[in-house]
Image (cartoon, rainbow, N blue to C red; front, side, top):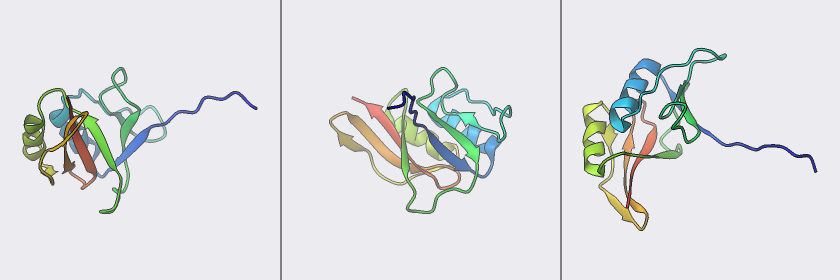
Length: 120
């Protein structure tokens, strides 16, 4: 069997890179910038040193049935939910408690489904 490395990552399609980077920076406290060094622009979630393997890219957002990407927040869930609203997104659920912590569903500027996660 051939020895190879398998990696995984997520991509969130957005219609306006600058506005979306500002949204994710405001909600999650990231310091993302747009990287134009490849064939397509991208912005790594959380920045290169803190990334869990995901980025924003110019693309067509998923329909209502698209996947949900859960992202950890640095403070409490209610503060994160307030930042979503202030940044132009939409909170679409109340806080949900699970053994690992709490989360709420929201939508970003393009309607992409995101989860805000507060660890226990």
